[in-house]
Amino acid sequence: MNNKNLNFVIGLGRSGFWAAKYLISKKKKVIVIEKNKNKEHIIYKKKLEKIGVVVRLNTAFDIKEFSNYFDKIENIIISPGISLENQTITKLKRKGIQIIGEVNLGWSNLKNISWVGITGTNGKTTVTHLLSHILCSNNISAPAVGNIGTPICEYAYYKNNGLKIDWLVAELSSYQIEIAKIIKPKIGIWTTFTPDHLERHKTIKNYFNIKNNLLQQSEYRIYNYDDKSLRESSKLLSKGIWITTNRQDKKDKNCDFWIDNYGFIVENGIQLFNLEVFKLKGKHNIQNLLLATAAARKIGLTSNQISKSLKSYKQLPHRIETIFRDKNIEIINDSKATNFDSTIASLNSINSSIILICGGRIKNGDYKSWVDIIIKKVEMIFIYGESSELLKEYLLKGGFDKNILIFKSLSEVVLDLHKYSKREDRRVILFSPSCSSFDQFRDYEERGNFFKDLISKSFLNQ
Image (cartoon, rainbow, N blue to C red):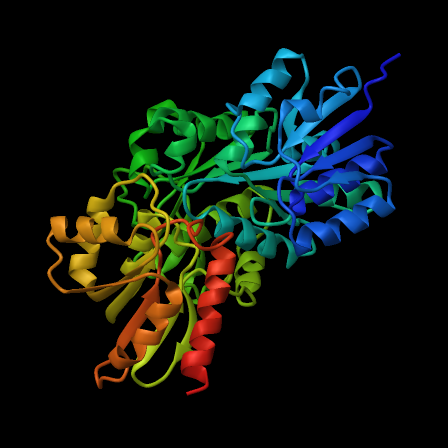
């Protein structure tokens, strides 16, 4: 008889909460360990304790916390933010204890449902949200889950309680895929690939292989031919469907979906629908649309069903989101731009004169292309936060010779914005950080909401 029925959940964010709630619904014993203690943790603690979960706040992830339970532990479910090279994980593995992620746990209950697994350095959240919207608008129950912000275990729990799910549209980060190599989606989508998270994955090859594992495990695969890295790595990738925003030459058709000269999405020579029904800005968002369309077609939707659903689609917050506009300026919140490539895509989508606000905790990546597009499109830059001096150094080294203003915080930036927003010529103020938020904020959403609140108080109430 197997006496191992105790599961530890490490981290009490939303995914940890739903992992614990799901496990209790399966009659498991659960202990949650959280190293911090804030209002959210206290609320979750109270809810979980009511259903029999033991919750320990202000408790470090240390081997001594498990020493009395080694013969009883079934699984330890870790947060994606914990590296698999963590010393405590290494010690637990030596004891023969299984380490899994919340995604593994959700997969164990939901693997009989068809999944779309979506990964990529940039674009994956938009593709996930967009595809889920297209399917749900056509009476297909297809919730968006995973890295987009809704834990997979939340739907594992509700499925156990009778919820009908037709498809699961899952955004999967490299951290999630790394620990959940067992996931085998019906459809895999790879949006883009540029250097990111190398402080965790060490080499670009490791990062590539983690992403590629998801696609290799998928029954059908969809790739972005516009992405240089994916295009140049095509011989290393499993066979699949390719999309491009460029018109296909009749003599050289590399892709299955493209845009023709009349603005129509074309599938293997057949016009589907015109881009005019899609309202998001930027070439990168047309790529996202093509990826979602290719998946929707594979699932069985008609071109008319897809185009009708797009008319009701709304932009996700923090992604080239206009938050203020008058006759002289437009202010855009692009807090989701956590790396250089995201900001490059945003700058390319704007035709007006641009004032750029950036800063935060810098990631590894190619800053030279970032500097090049800034030289072409940006008239002045406000930089704040931990990496401000390094970003300034990159800009000066690359030849940017216009105004660069340095600030400690985002609040100070917005206080200084007014004097540059009252000129007669039309301009765009773009908040596109090019960095992670972790120097001053919990995540890009908190950063974006903080910026929106600052703009509301400073501009909307003037």
